[in-house]
Image (tube, rainbow, N blue to C red; front, side, top):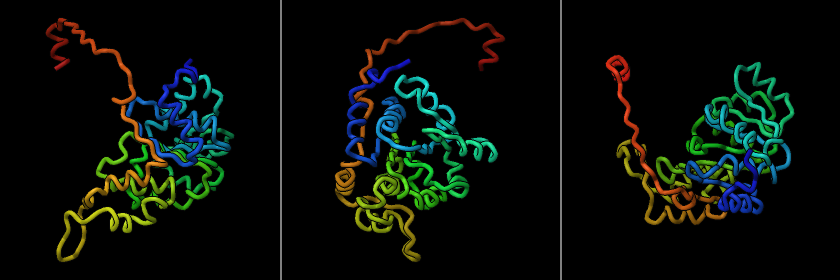
Length: 255
């Protein structure tokens, strides 16, 4: 079992940053250990229960596995609000430290229970929340103020451009840094790229000059961006070739 001393210095720096930043965005590339970092923050700094919302596969197999793998996290009681509606309702009645639900069920959850029973909120793969027009974002938005602490995690915060940050950062600061509406955000930092001249409908947007730097500066106090190439220390690659002979029948199956 891994110990807390196995955490990397950059993970410890993030954990320390969280002490002074209640609502924190962790933009960490794959392989840097987002989940265990967030769980350590939750275990050591959060009070009350924590709701984790993640894509289905991640919700089902990652978070509870991480808790079981680390000595300083294995005491956390993890409950998955997944499966049939009967199973989800039963999970809500259990006493736990960490409740995990997949993205597809967040709208159901906001209708089925008082979200304030969860004290803290973690959005795993927060880029899935980049569109404020989705039902899940609208359902969550009504409850954001009820959480004492909020974390967002992703390795790809801007898959389609810096405009994707508006709703993600809004989960953290409720619009304080990047304006309270997407319209105001676009007016300030973007300009129409492709637009129907007759209907004035905008199909795509582009950044104004230096807007990306302005946005980064605005959110730098509550968001941390870590690249794997800057932090992971790996040995020199050794390429090993293993040649195997395939008989006619095996080759046919392989093809």
